[in-house]
Length: 116
Length: 112
Image (cartoon, rainbow over all chains, first blue to last red; front, side):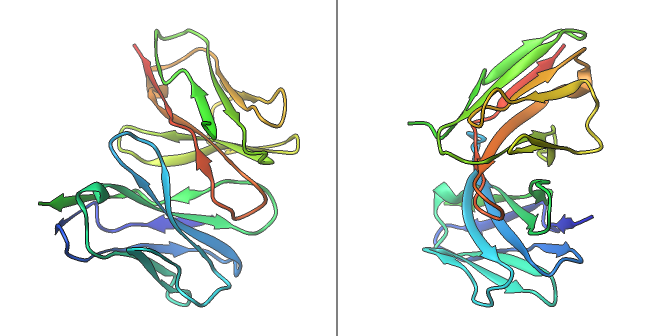
């Protein structure tokens, strides 16, 4: 079974600074997808960024980018120019591309605090 | 228009009762899911439903049963509610494999 590990239960960063959230995963599959989801206090789950494992290029969405290291099974999220609205729980998630429809496997989350 | 909707958003009930949570998606997606988020914020897949194929996470008690009247709906029925069932339940949907999963707003279930 796949596992996703987020080793930082909580991170704090000053507004306008850059922060990196860590994620590692374990899988025997060669084809899969990785995601970062944001959950603000409203509890709505919001997709931040998506990475396809067969693509070597790191995904980027505005101030959000990932460092995808397939051999190391690492998928970190970098948030540049942090804003107060970035404060939330961030979840790393894995989806296998094999047969079946078994859903996302989530890490335990990182609580991101933005200091004004 | 809301992409994935759930009703109710809050549900308070007593132990032993039976309750249902409804989920509807208007995105034309072919796969729907139910996730449970516990008090420590950990999210875990409960069910996935694709073209009438139901895949159940082996850890889910058989008191939980998903029901899909059509491709746009996947309701969650829970029998004989227990205190440990208190959690936030999320419905989600996607098209194909590996695409973005769109989540509903969640239903906070409290069992007293």
